Image 1 (cartoon, helix red, strand yellow):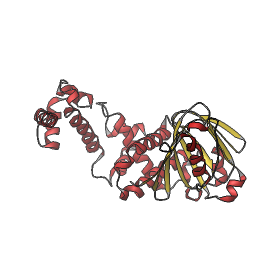
Image 2: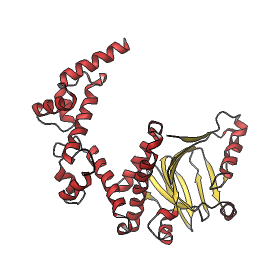
Image 3: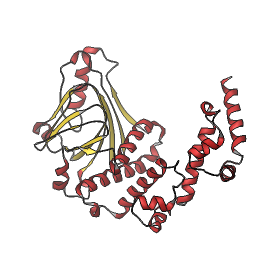
Length: 327
């Protein structure tokens, strides 16, 4: 995945703040930056473009930022910014509203309106999703009701979006450029779902977008509950208040059925643990039980079908190969 990176730590300490200030002033959404400790201002930004959406990850010390009417007249790309704090706290204000967000909390901003932000308690790492206002299926006036309000990223669709962003920022280099449109669609579906939930306007979202967001939500739920032996298609459907038939329909375009995907994910977790030298003393059945397999014979048969060898043989061969490589 192609990324645009800005760092100032290779500059002399006295020049670092000015370099960041100039970069911020010349951006497509220019802002004024103020800081009380300009003598050694270490900051970094990394931006990945995903078709019509982009994600900017920033790591910035204590600072204040202002987007004024003058900045808006200079450049107004008519975007929304949805900010997720990965670490630290940020004070934010827009449209006569003020809020403070912490870790795994979101805040939304309209770039066509003045706003302010401040990291006053030290360094803050944040992921900012930037997207055209025109892409949203809601009236701008309604979306602006959410500006500078704290949105939760610890439960429900907010947690799924926070997980997606955190994982994407960590693994962006591992994705090929050809994945950008699909990742952008998935990300924007989650953003739209979060805003629709906050606005109680789910019916305004296109059915295919709702379906894609629900599919991601279902898969994340399954991943979190693989160790539960009671996890089944019926349990997944009940947890999401949908019919079993609709759950099956969600998985129709996929390679696996719901039950097959649950089994495949469990087997892959078991395979990874069996190949882990740090777990060589852990009994195979303990690993199988950890990931939801309650019957040893069923696990052994399923593992052999998936990987061509019994679990014990796979572990022996994999750990021996690992030992040879290290030796």
